[in-house]
Image (cartoon, rainbow, N blue to C red; front, side, top):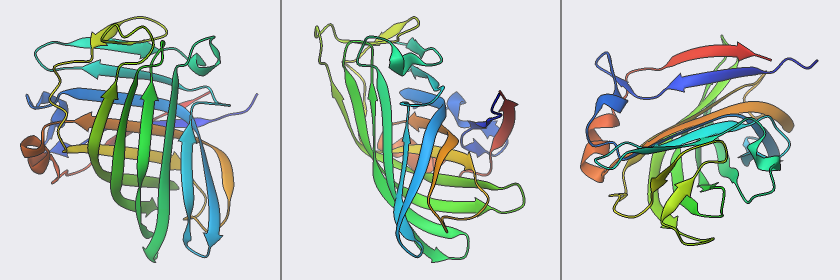
Amino acid sequence: MINRSITAVALAVVAGGIATANADVVLTLTYHDLNGSYTQSSPGVGAFTAVAAGSEAAGEVSRVDTNPGNASFEVGFEVDPNPADFQLSLSVSTIAPGVATGSGSMILTDADGDTIAANLSGAWIYDSVNGFIFFNGAVSSVVVTDNGVQDDLFDGTQFGNFQLSGMDLTDGALTQIVFGAGSFFTTDFANAATGVTAQIVPAPGALALLGLGGLVAGRRRR
């Protein structure tokens, strides 16, 4: 059996309080055990991807405003006979030892093909003591598309859904990505168990969250 470590991240701990308590949060998402890989194009420059395919990924996407709901995706959801998926792609450009900038996009797909897509930009940081690479950044240009049967619902593959319309998803959010690594983007790698957590909030609320003070991480082994 292959052991794979997962890090679950509590995002944006501000002044001792977790940001999910902020009333401005509209949408939260957490995907864990994604398949992370990196391809280097030149020293310190390359592309990182995290996808559900070929992994034991699971996830949860929740609407937490005045019209709440939850869509849950079970372990291995991407192999079910439906379009559900998760894909993320980010650039890597090293600017100092253990620090790099990155930008790219992510797209969430539900059980009948509806999508939530967004752009990402931020910074990569290497925790050399614990052997983890983190990406802390902002989410912008969130686009919701009701495909499939156009039922105005984002449907989980395991259970649950929430209404797509009526969400205030203007620019402004926070995201965090984390995975274990023996070095900071010095060589190509694949099959890195990766966790992605994000909170999407209206722009004014996002400004308050940008002063995040830390994170809480827990490790789980298979």
